[in-house]
Amino acid sequence: MSNETPKKSVAIIADDEDLGRLLLGESVTAAGLESLAFADGAAALDAALKNDVAIVLLDVDMPVMNGNEVCRRLRAEPRFGSTPIVMVTGHDDSDAIRRAFEAGATDFVAKPVNWALLPHRLEYILRNATAAGHIERLAYYDTLTGLPNRQRCIDLMGTLFETAARAHEQVAVIYLDLNSFKRVNDTFGHSVGDEVLRTVAGRLTSTIASFAAQHPRVVVARFGGDEFIIVLRHAQAREVGVQIATACNEAFEEPIAYDSLEFYSAPSIGIAVYPDDGQDVTTVLKHADTAMYHAKSGASGPIALYAPAMSSRLRDWLDLEARLRRAVHDDLLTLMFQPKFNLEEDRVVGVEALLRWCDEEYGDISPARFVEIAEDSGLILDMSRWVVRAACRQARQWLDRGVRIPVAINCSGKELLHGDPAGVIETEAAAAGVPTSLIEVEITESLLVKDSMTVKNMLQRFRQLGCRIALDDFGTGYSSLAYITRFPPDRIKIDKAFVRDVDRSAGDAAIANAILSLAQGLNLTVTAEGVERPGQLEWLRARGCHEVQGFLLSGPLTPADFERRFLAQDAAQTQTAETPQGTRRRDRG
Image 1 (cartoon, rainbow, N blue to C red):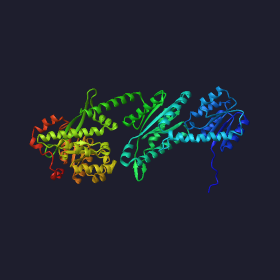
Image 2: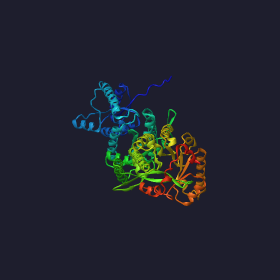
Image 3: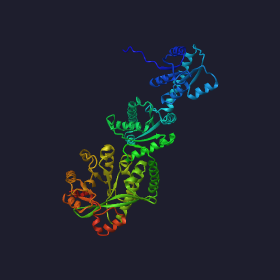
Image 4: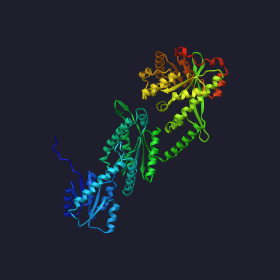
């Protein structure tokens, strides 16, 4: 059993009179506190900043620094926002009282002091402070993580901005957002998400603690959801802010473990600095948020310092988002179709549907850009439904001409993990009057290991509908044989990165040969993407690649151009473009 006595809370006393310090010390002891007494304000301020302080008692007139200034500087520190500060002074005129309360004093005791009454008055002040502190925690602190909440963070920023302006210093606002947290909530539930957030808060607090010894004016807050704010006041706030942001990013390189699960929550971090990047809290916060989104876009790595050009890019982004939303809802998108060719039979065996968007003001927008906007804004599910609907309608038109052409559509990670693509295909195919077996779903291989149970369930639903499954961009992701054999696709598509120099590079040839051998062993169809030269085509044909796709044979075409080039030539031949279900394996070599 320990013989140590509990450590008492500390009271800071500042009075330039020896007798005053002695009597104040006795009153503090009678109230159950330990006292630290000083003859000047500067020493008292220094001690207060280094200790866990329950109350501060200050004379007004003192050498080096007066009591009002000590009070004002303490109130500028976030942790002294609700600490009782009592002015004990011989000045009892209205101006003196006004100045004390303007500096942030909690109470005012005029000399001569009633020493018998003072301990009871201090106890009363401390009880009120405890009750006020409890109310403040409920109002200004996040109940899940214990960190300051959004309102408290904004208030602290305002205070730090004011003190930084007087001290000719800077304030860095570091905006941190977890990139994959929504998937944790959606997949495993909010109780698991809450535990992840507590772990995140703990890591951030530990990281900040390593800087706090040298930079005491640093605070971390939960701003809402999976967003956290770190605020730092310092003469070189920008440089120190980058150091803190780098440390926070490194803190999440290791996975977050919970109940045999592991989560990788890489952050995107934006930094804006007062006064360079804004003169008020609202502006600096907005610019830190803008920088965070710039980091999230991948344009500058996981950490981005705000620059004015980012605001114009964000405005363009938001404008494009609004235009894209209208394009989806008003049916202003288009589908192009790139043919896939069977090398053995030299005929078209299907098409891949490729989404295109031409805005009336911006012109042609690259798919990479508008898909990123759709995923970031949550529009991806509506846009994917539009693609499925348009693909099914086009397949119906070809059926009406007497030809059955399988149409491949791309399924994004967000759609697979957060939407119901199988349900969308079933609904839209029924509405268009086409068999679901005409729809092929392309997913990237990295999705197989992101969330195996969710992926497995969705792949089973695709199978039940009769949809074929293709593994796109094969060779660029995880390439885990365990996952491929556990959730076998019907087709793997060799990424164009390995096709580009397959007839010129021994390395690319070795990779392509390995993929072809793997597919043969698993009885899978292989489609090579990005075939642009005769040398590539002949190399693939000689080694038994089943299908190819690329500009050498045909780029993406409008439905009318596709019909003119391929359907009009030999309608009878294209009627057999989809292999009957009972002989599907025959085409796999």
